[in-house]
Length: 193
Image (cartoon, rainbow, N blue to C red; front, side, top):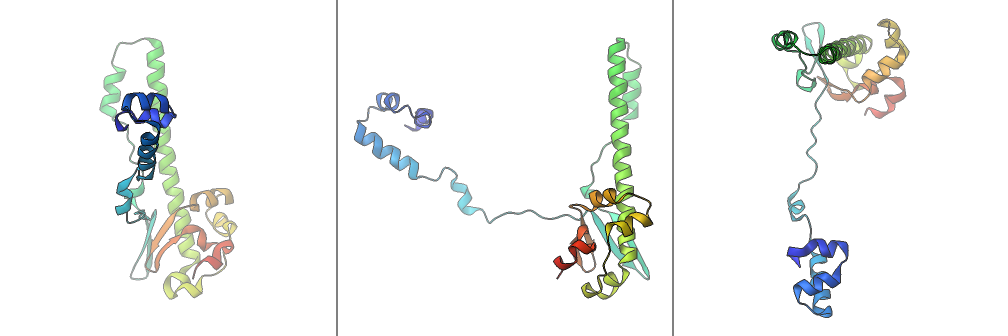
């Protein structure tokens, strides 16, 4: 039966019975036994999920200054190998190939710039959160003051939707612990205990 398990899976019991040489009753007993087994026996030893949250932004204090930095281990690492680009550009190839290479390089360079811009925006927003919530960071959770996306957006000359998008699902590691960036805004104030 095990050697022809796909027949059992497809419900082709007649063929399985022929191949195994078992009568109806014995085949049913064997199928019942197989169905009682755990198809993933290793899960018995699983100790649960091991998802470890990694902060996107790290906040530290040195003397009287608050420092904000991106967690480089969570950032994508993308680069264009310029020596390889020169080598490709020097190849003799069709015009359509040159166009494809040029478009691909432009896409890669655009992606790199977009990631750099996202990182700059994340730092600006994080710094402004620290600036507006200094008492929270210096004195504790009960000093978290009401703040809306518009407060941060206005200070850094960006649209509220940008601030919302950047703070969505991002984690900030601070001396007080790790927080979702969204909790610093009024709609989320009740979620911090």
